[in-house]
Image (tube, rainbow, N blue to C red; front, side, top):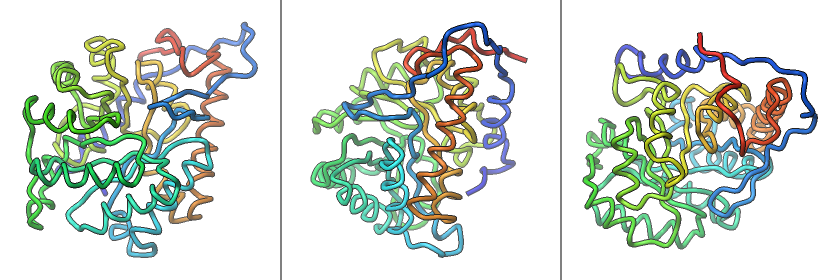
Length: 304
């Protein structure tokens, strides 16, 4: 669950967010900020989503099964007015559990698939469609997961042509997660992705990569509104969420804090963490003069 190698990439996510502070403004008329938004035609009460996580029960000592954990994440997210993501891994029960949890919530979830061989991706894509998932994607940075290869589940980088071939096979909104440079954001757009997630995989893939907040503005500038830009990495509070929104993200994915929520209180624990972070987001919006999460200006930030 920690960062790879020296942990520099994991720390970079935290440090990049910490370098931004807020310009406090209280002479304005914002008293009831709006956190509602729509993503992939899903109406949400908050722009804070649950990131895809697998293998967490193993890392946390087995207090929950894979199904219990991801069910808490998917259900808790929906109760908080959000939407949760499920993931993929070397153990088939990881992907299976995610689909079961999403199907149990009438498809209210987003499924991510590892960058496997084409036929393996397509097989999982079809299962995601059958489960009713609202969107599907590939965490393309999963190409660096050594554990997948060690367990006989090879993953690899993909060309634009390979991605385009997969994306063309589904009518679901397709998300590429793990984009960290403007040129790859442009390539994702060319491949037909509906959205991208600016993410270094929580610092668990490549040592010494920058934090998501460092590269986000340039990526947003490169693609404009052609694709929906999401972001994750080091988000621990509603204030962190507002920083990423100000840097250009449309919505933000949160991972590790929801592990605490799920293991501490199951479904209600996840809901509570997301509700708390949304409350923190509202407070920060009031104190920076932001009326809506759909219109957050960069000038609320002060760069140290």
